Image (cartoon, rainbow, N blue to C red):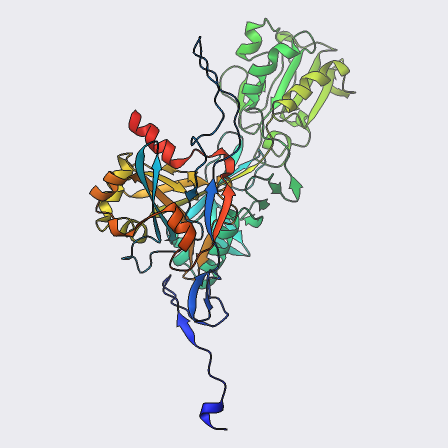
Length: 499
């Protein structure tokens, strides 16, 4: 067959949106599944997300005769905000950001610079609401057998994980980097992830959902440590029981010895706790960390009791309540003639106090905070002199958001941000197989400040123009309500200026 009658070979185009530089055939997508070849044109598969002002808030009244109703519209009339979700990147770093948006807010011309950042230097901090022992501090956390992070310091009522980071993404094996990237992407997009901790527990973690630890779904975050629980509820137990012990891996509380009990005139009971006494009524290390009562290894709470002392108030019939910091475990005892505690049916008079502990426990949740450092590609997309952006952010002249969600900017050098992924639009994150995570970032500031930064004045466009014409990759518009009650970035910027 003559060459001119053969089917033409499909034309491939090269994608320059990340360092992988895929050659993509017509009708196919690149390795990241974010860009595709559509009839010879490179298109962005995720549409640009434009979020809109949220629902009405509770009426606000000024004090005094000048009371006014507030309709809850935080941006005074409904205004779109162009996020970086679906915007595209600035790679190879010298290009202006995909969208540089002009928008008037309260009579001031504001600029929002919109770009998706490619983050090799990124990770997540995971807060798991539980007292249960998930593993020793610094223990390696694994996904699919690969190391992806470690257990870090426990916080009040929560266990903490630090996952990702450049050493796991790029400093280990190819498998480690790939699995780390997959794990971070799933967590940031609010999907469940199975993790294991060396010498510890198996976990299922999902942002905004209850953690699952060794196959058991957690229900409650503790109301406080054992000492704090005594302080909060001692008055509830007065005249109902002779002694209360709140079992806790960190600080076990004893009401008769605790200052709260002393203030209430609580009599001594001759109780002895096996543990390291801290201050009166507060004991450390009554047990090793575990999955039992109050995050200990204890299945039988009597294990932490020594012999009762008659010379210090112990007597036959003395009543004893033992309870955990969540109220999930509880037991009732009375001393026999030999001053040994004997289990008795739980009395109705104490059920209300145990229920009160449970009622004061918040639901156990997993919190996922994305953390990343904004480097060259992000800053160079805003200004030709990137350090100016850093100084503007640190000087609070530029407000940073991720998908419209407020971020915490760490003090010190650079632009290191942290954001709660549940406040961002769903599926706001992507990846490139270098491997690295792709996250939306927006910088909002006044037009005159932006020009002084050395910004790309010729690239500034209106919201209407962006909606009408899209961007370099023909992004269709997608409207969403602003998630999580986020403050509107331009309004936050104006409020800062007024101060």
